[in-house]
Length: 336
Image 1 (tube, rainbow, N blue to C red):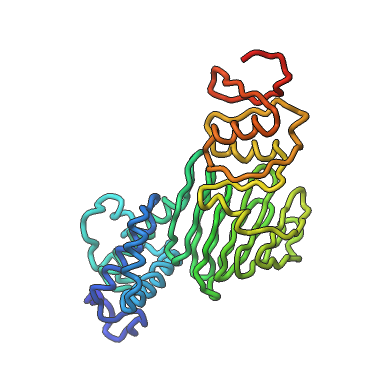
Image 2 (image 1 turned 120 degrees about the horizontal axis):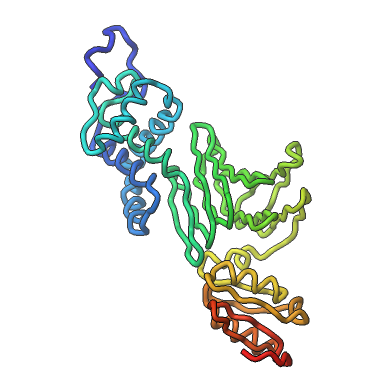
């Protein structure tokens, strides 16, 4: 019910309708899915709840209203509601605080709280040696790799992800009206209903397409774009882009906890393994640095990789006092 102070002749907002239990549950899900850490069982519970058509429709309505709160951020009544949410998170909002926004009372209050938490919890990160799985409010899924960070910015017209560092795997919920855009410092990747990964390490951005299609635009040449097809990747470095064929399953094997190397120079393989390690491997064998290695290793399993590399390339592993492991030629007379 709207505030009784509303003008009798005022038009009834299109969103106002009889609220159901599903609407209340949907508002709760908006807030729960906007938190910093989302457990796997929570995601599974949400999927089961949303599989019911009435719940899916209620969530769609809640998401629309929630997106609109971003547009109303400067509205004094919304600001008052958010301010009170910070002071009294466990109490109900009064009707007058949100009536001017034209939203139903209880649902709008829940959405305002959800928007508040979203604003302060829109950065997600995976620490060194861990991965994180997230489900965003639009239903898209993201898997963050080790030492990775993203910032989420959802508006009514666009779903934007800023990849600050590392790499992330995206399974995008289909919504042509709201493009899903992943940004790095030197490129943007736009997708609709697509599965792909974006990697930002050092000065290089790499995009691998698993299914669907994506448009990649370099920051240096925003008027041109590349359309990738499945099992293609583009690598952007120093303002230049290179498109090549790739086995997408192999390139994204990290999502299953594995690192797959196919004719990969040993130095590059060591650098990749080190991304998952707090105490890295130091390759001190220049003659072996460019020798290709092939194999599949569990991410973070330093012992298995060191053992294989030592055996294949006639290297010796020396454990340093600080925890690092140095790989040297077995012909090196240095003692460890």
